[in-house]
Length: 300
Image (cartoon, rainbow, N blue to C red; front, side):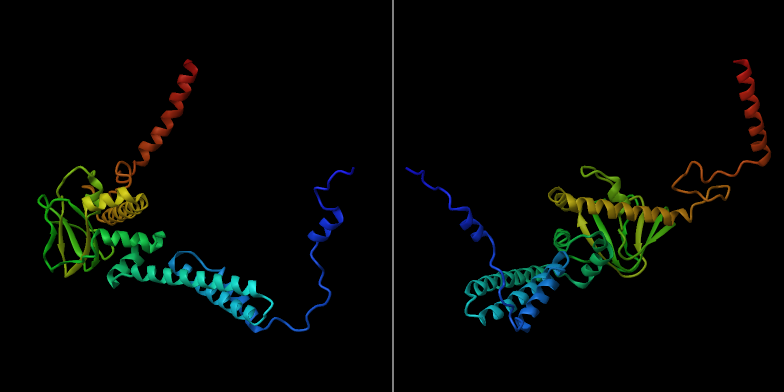
């Protein structure tokens, strides 16, 4: 009695694996619709990231699979090809509508668009995250009339963070001019960074509008709640606030002089304002050091 055969003969297995060879090439090409579909698919897969990249990607893919659907419909022997291309066309079309709807929901007024382009876009912040930032301030834009104060020295509490959108603000302390604040700069970044979330304080400078100013403002509590939910937004604000403070310090550096008339460099306050040492003292010093070193070397 012969044992049962659990596997087919090796010849049949080889015949099932090997793809049949093309016996005769077609005399005609597949047509312009097929090639147009391939071009759209290639262009679609070259799309970038972000909302506009996704919009470009799914637009090209939708057109590509639509052309493939038309091409496969013309051949009665390719029902499965038609069904697959039609299904992919439907999926891409739905995704295209979804991305377009989300992109419409994150559009902003012109002033917020300018704020995004000037401060956040260059850092790679997406429109979705910027939408959360705008929602935190409720999309409100405030106005300071000319010669009105944003903050009074020693009186106004530090309870918000603000960015100037238009106009110019003069910063003074004890009546002495310090610097100007220009559009798309933080108005109160030093005060914001000087306090912890649980601390309270008042302005040490006076901020007065030179002309009619418009600004956007975030309340401290609401902004810290946003930071707690989105650590990425907290890191972005930490970067832009400290960069703004550095710019203000450099602007002050050009106006700082000590009592002897030497420029006071705020980056190195201990050294950069010191007058140069007289040549005689430096020469004597250098002469004494080798002698002392040689004497101590001989004594040892």
